[in-house]
Image (cartoon, rainbow, N blue to C red):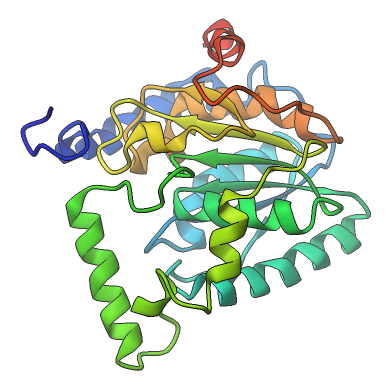
Length: 268
């Protein structure tokens, strides 16, 4: 139990590690793509987390390009829209990228963005070769710190009052997002790769909610917001993205995978 007593979370001030994690990344050889396999032009669609926009994954985008990947932003200024509406727009973007590149697409999603990526893979496995989710609470989207729950409530209230581009309170349990909720819990396609990255010192999301029965699990030592700038994340991406280029992956157990964690330690 933590000082705040929230679902066994570490204190939220663990998120203050972000600056240290950013500096560590810039100083790490992985940031210079040393030892990172070339991406061979694999298309990667990036989806930011709740309240964040494309710019939040800007550093990762530039790194992926240096590593030989073709990156595509999803066009979000802030990930706060109705889930159903967001999925519709993201699917259009996915279709565009897949048609333009002539191959299936890898999706990297942070936090809420990872949940949207999962839904897209369930609905369009023909267009998705694999997904990587960073700190995404797959088992329970509301397994988050109370301060984030408060933010969700405020956005939902504003959306309900008619502010455009915001989800409504009814999106949490109403009919508009019922299909999205079903697909968040649906069996994951066996021919689509799925890597779920989590951290036990995540100050926002309960790490246990990141465990998905269809995923291979990888543990890193990062804050929640810092997953997009943590050296371990980049080292992991450099090793797993090549495996997601083509149809692959067998469902992993719903516990942290020993093989997955061992592979991460082996490249650390």
